[in-house]
Image 1 (cartoon, one colour):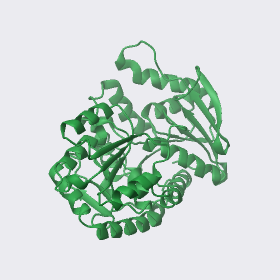
Image 2 (image 1 turned 90 degrees about the horizontal axis):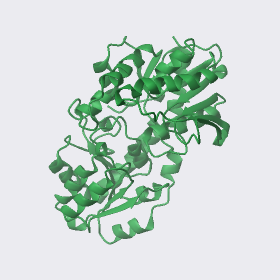
Image 3 (image 1 turned 180 degrees about the horizontal axis):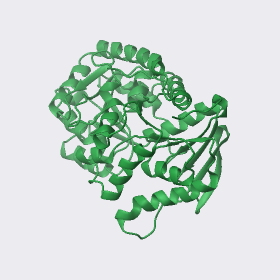
Length: 405
């Protein structure tokens, strides 16, 4: 059981491969927002991360006075199968320098959990599990993990004092991987910066498109295979209202060249606009008619909350685990804040896009309902205090961390 005598004596160390200033992925956003809230609540917070070390390691002070140790990633010419264990020992070496028994580690990767146990066995550890490699591989997103990686993923939740996940879907994946005692896994949904998303000024170019009668759906996120943007492109190509649709794609990633080729093959060069990575996409989102999230794998989907906060209806796949490992329909309220297409059914996604294109009044109602649902149920303060209560009592504050059903 993780227990601390006084709440303000809790010192939290967040461990993740990537951190600020990389705030494009859900895990990076989650870590940064939680660290800021804990700092504002008067907790001592520090960070260990692998990115931007400038040498073997470097100490930084982040905004809000958060100390950050940046360590070099493992790049040695060893067999690929040994890298998970090398990374674990690498993390343990640096943690041993800073380990303090009164700290509570919140680790977002299995090697960080095991390294924390090696560096300081008395230190409490929470495994913040964001994905299971075997589930990603089953979805065709990544190659099947090797034996060492699978061993780490099985060992980490066993060694951790508590395990947190952002959705019931990830909880089911974890329980399929390893048998854990009842009550060890806790669902703590992500939050959103509601004020930033709800107060964003709509982008004028997108508003101008809408004023000319175009339907303007948008995708925001990484352009990688698991995000399924190719599925959305194929759906746009099959829309009855394709001619008056302008699909906006915001993001960058390894799949971008293939997506551009696919858009040309589908004769969508006039229907699709690639905007690249934007540091502040809130204005584009606020001006869109709908957010489309067509992921092949999605453990949560913070962008859905950002869309709801901005008053924009959402369109995604309906969860169908294990065939469709996407947790999106746990977040939106189908038929009230957005729509869910049958998992990976491109024709159904096209029909749902046409349905929204034909009904501007419904889009407004979805947007208004989504904004209220998001404001009432999702915040970073709720997630941060859920972690603190888990540290203090062993149970999160359930009423502050609801999950849509």
